[in-house]
Length: 85
Image (cartoon, rainbow, N blue to C red; front, side):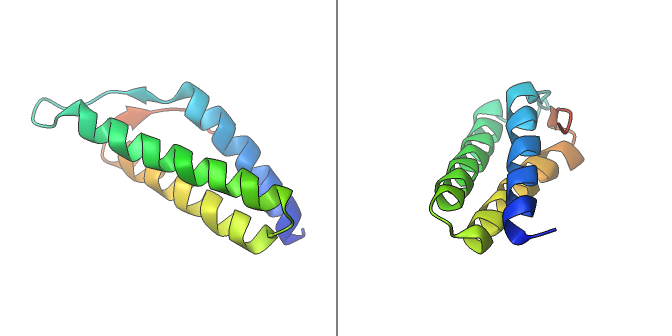
């Protein structure tokens, strides 16, 4: 699989996850902080699409991986739930 194909695949999966993400939250944490992390994940997602469209496949892959990592960290902390596409 090429770097371009990998980036395209991860972007597709992340698009579905961002559509489905639901904040569960926690009583001791302001959910606005969770929203900030989700917004940051969305910015990296948009960066990934931007770089993919310009042929910068490695940068696209790095951006989408970072986006995915942010969302995964929130899920692992039990703050959000979603399904990978």
